[in-house]
Image (cartoon, rainbow, N blue to C red; front, side, top):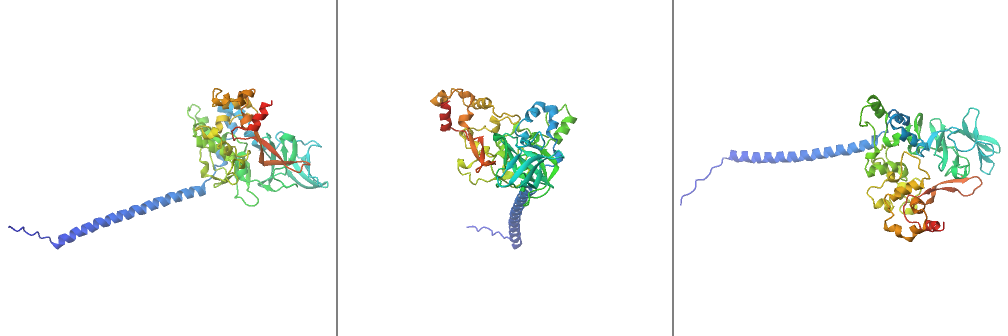
Length: 429
């Protein structure tokens, strides 16, 4: 048998091959390490960027706003309707026109029944004051500076103490047309309840905050406030929009403005929940949230006491009640705007609201064949009284003069369901 020639491999060649192999493996290892390092670096940058953004979120400046009067040139009808809405009237400069309580003698005071009286007085300077007297001796006076509330239910009043705001001790209660102790106040006049930027976030379109909060509250710039919940609360700061449209009147597409009509369901709900979503704990400075943003980026929900439906109050958490309703859970599109016209004052227009109910609940639906709907006269004109009756608020109650227990306001619940007691009431009518 013929022997095969032995292949001679030089040691230098083997060393070269091994070196190349090791070099390739080394490069792979180096590449892998580099990739991991780069990934960690980029991830860290992302996390740091998110944290940095969360820490440095800033509300828009006062100059970013145009003021709702600037909207009249193009949106006159919407603007004029909105002037009469509870949103627009939720705050304003205190004046004879805006303050709803009486300053007439005999109707202009609240007696605490212990020798202490707070009188509502017009001073010689033409300004209005709440003045505390003890046994006829003046002890304290504070000026009415800002009206809070449209007077649908009542009004409270704020006063400037240097650059800070305090709530005055006496409130106007519409249902009884009289002055009363402000909600949550002790049965004695107190002039030192601080007002925070979170209060102002839901009662003004914008308030310029000039300090961080402390035990005395926060400081504001009185000259940089936009009172009421007006156009720019839902459409965003509009100075740039107004400037552009004024310069380019021929432009067909609106620029530099937010249009909630283009929002998805979550965006629409978040916009309303900013002030109608219950107890929100802010994680960003007040006024940072802009229409169209995610509310979760700026707030966390305080759900303590709201584990059950009975824990959700009819005042201030309409969203919390609505989202528990079958009307909401069985729909993919229902929002606050389904039933409410944000531009208008629709208070008391039961037929209008009922027509909106009927747009989903046709009379041919099986529910309308039930005896309850047959015996109630005008069923299509008043869905609200049976399915969204007025209920007592636990969070807003006032102490009327001479009373020993507070009187709570009543509001329509936004938990839409069948209320047997209301049905029985209507059967008797």
